[in-house]
Amino acid sequence: MRASVVTIHGWHLTGVEMWPLRRRLQRHGFEVHAFRYRSRRETPEQAARCLRVFLERIPGEVIHLVAHSLGGMVVRHLFALAPVQRPGRIVMLGAPLAGSRSAARMAGTRAGRWWLGAALDRGLVGGSPALQGRRIGMIAGNRGLGVGSLLPGTLPRPNDGTVAVDETYGPEVVHHLEVPYGHFRLLLAGPVADAVVRFLEQGEF
Image 1 (cartoon, helix red, strand yellow):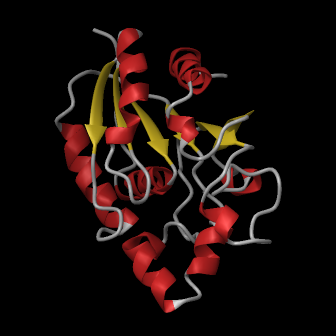
Image 2: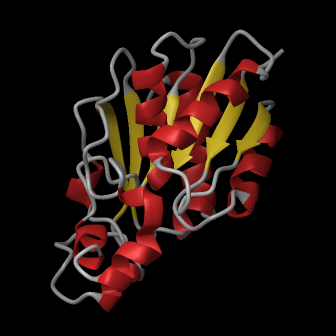
């Protein structure tokens, strides 16, 4: 049996948008499972507690994790809560591990804080615990439109329209790949999916 893969979606998403990526992973023989959480109502730590229970139900000796955006912070909290997990590789897509400037700027207003919701709690604006004991591959977009485009002067270049490339670095990131896509396109682009597969199979991009 091939390894299992669990996908973790980002903020204000449902996981449905990761379907094209999951389909490509299935074509490469992976058994793929989608974890869903309420990104505005559950803090990343609360979502991680649910993810911990979810993973216990997944079959196989190896479980890889593929996380988009805020999902990367959920994975960080998972290993802080339960550092002993089955072996597997971790790929993150556009996850602002260093904190999101766009989110921090939006959090400066009442409406912005409401819109971001629980994702602000040791999540989008920083404060999530560095992942201990695992090394990850990060894929960061360096071209595109997103929420950052509505906040002029907020994001340095390069960025994916929502997250700046320099925000995707963290102490656990040992392999980093820049691709010419926007934040949401990271989930749809074939070359990104191919890079995810390579990392899960070989441990490098």
